[in-house]
Image (cartoon, rainbow, N blue to C red):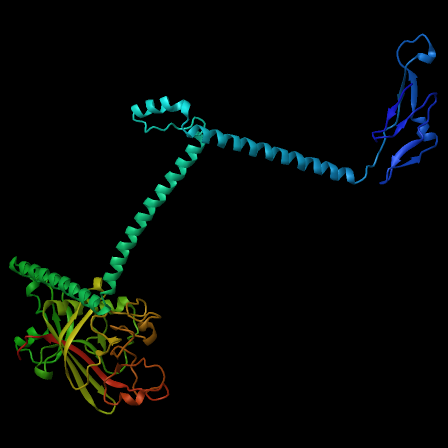
Length: 451
């Protein structure tokens, strides 16, 4: 006898004779047996004797069946999934049980028992504090120690942060106590001190050069006032040397107006010279000293450094009105300080346009040109907008280097401008005519000059 299992509980095949044909197969999703017949099924079944035998009926046989394809119902898949979930739950229960046993062991070991009284007394005699650490709690102690270390670090960081916040708060309170005016006064005073030191060193060096017999100190006077003292009373071009360390250069001297001795540093008369120039042009000067010109910021600095100078501004409009503004203190710093202007002590008839208001004060301002922005206007370059080089604020209440107009004009106020002129109130709107000036002259001479 032989038997072939199909793999489905309760289903088996029995055959007693050869050739054998398999007639049953499992298919479908409802466990229904279906008949399978035909020559192809039977041709794949082989039955042959296996091994030696005396009696043919008792001889063992070996049967070869074709591969079987059995489709099981979907409930078997759910059963497999349930078995996996059950196995996972069993593993979780095992881990929890192990953890609880470990915790209970640690708790038991941490409590002193009657059997450990002698041991506790021994520990106390050694100074261990009378309590023994659990032998199996090294992992828990490591975790607790790590947490305590992190907490200590966080505490130290928090203390440092509080200290820094306190320091910053103190600095902020100090800054709140300072207003912008105080800061400007401090900066101005320090710059003035530096300028004074530089001037003293320069004068000392010039004196030493003269004492050593340097031939340069006798080439020419320092400014036009020296020529006036030498009885030169005629207007014209003269050579001066404000600093013996530098070469001579030509200036126009006004020897006839208001006591004479005036060194002219700027003159406008017909618009023949363009004043919309670069920083380099204003540095070295441009134009002709016997016509329209700008003497040059380097030369103006040397002239005002050598002596305390007075500035006189002469203006005349096309209606023939002539007025002036005089300043008892006039100084232009060197290029390192962007030719900073120091101006004070107004008197005259034209009005003090150089100190017009809080945001239109040209005193202590740097020089600005179209290619170098040193003004106080945050959103643009005043020199580029108005087409000139000047000591702009944000932007101006005076600009004697503006465009030359030979008559009144409209639009942007980019011409020669003096805000305190007698009829400026009529120019409030852009559609109104702007004031034009026929002549402008800026000239300086020493404060202690006596005609």
